[in-house]
View 1 (cartoon, one colour):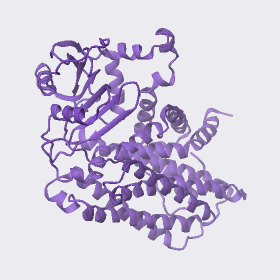
View 2 (cartoon, rainbow, N blue to C red):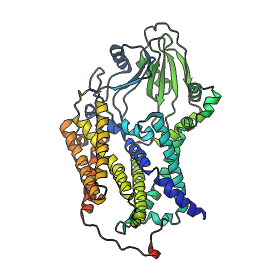
View 3 (spheres, rainbow, N blue to C red):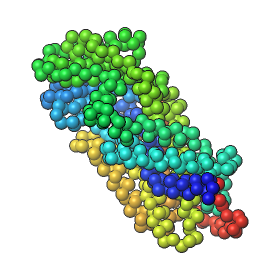
View 4 (cartoon, rainbow, N blue to C red):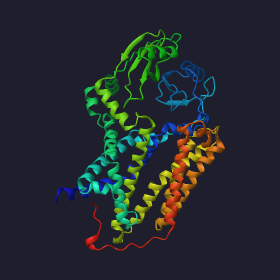
Length: 508
């Protein structure tokens, strides 16, 4: 067996086994490219395009009035072009429980907006499947499988440049799917290789913690503190004096950074005399924001520490920024979106090739593989659209509203899976109906948005708010594509001529 033959088997099984999981990861990461725009769409209070005039001190005052427990820390982020509102989070001392709230930018004083999962739901689904550390390890393992499949796929490709220009959608099923798999794989190969590598690399300290555990005697937080150069001051267990203005410290930080923008502001041990304020720099023009931090005494405002990220940490941040498209603006995020969709199409094509090669063998288990394909490849997008419908239909005053949205997503996906199992022997009809349902969901959302919020598509376009309008426009495009595909599957399938032994499609 030569190298190409051994790599063909590795590519087939190394790509097949995690393919459904990789589809979930890639699809969620693709949607998360525009997570902040989706956050705005899912919060009707942000549809008017108003930028908050509230200050950091106003946000802290709200926290002091509404949270009576002793806090370990709290943190906030001011308005940006993509998120024109204040965000606040805090951790009650001794609980390790985190709370988050976002404030309506239309008022003079902070007022929390109704909670929602927002685009952050897809970001978390992408990197840990909403399963904490266990999910993060599973995603890392899937990323390693993807690297193996990509490299082995490159080795077995003898006609890589020819396949780039080859797509025969009217050919027999296996040939057409193989062309699609090759085309989308070649188009997105550099992107998928880089994203798979950086996705694994940025969590390497979590995947392989032994070195830090041994070198720091189990004190991993000390390791991360030294890597990032963070400043820490022990608690004095004495009451804190009146705090210094956070707005003043933010202004001072901008001056020291020659007018640079400020990102996260955090206060550690705010109820203790040892309280410190960390002001972090934000620079969206770079691949990976530098994470430079100024630390002040929370009472006197004295500058205690100036942290400039080390060379090694900057390299890590560069990898993280490259993976998460934290540079280049909307054009780069759009490119990531398109390449992510290519990755999803590559996986779908690969699974269909695997199925087409085994259809003539009479394997009864193939119907269950097709049911799993329908449950994941169509079920996940449909459940995501159902989540957006839930966001609009669940009342703003509903208790635990974000949790209810999550259950809408889970319930919809389970229903899609049940539907796929019941229709497993007529996958063509199932796919046609799924596409029609996707068209109804996608095309109905802009209409529902117009009925339930002030920021309907025409209003967004009239004021030039393309960030908000892009969500509705994408939904309309997706709905029309679903309609076109459903129409194609409505036609009676043409019987393909069974190829002879000499004309059988090869994998490369």
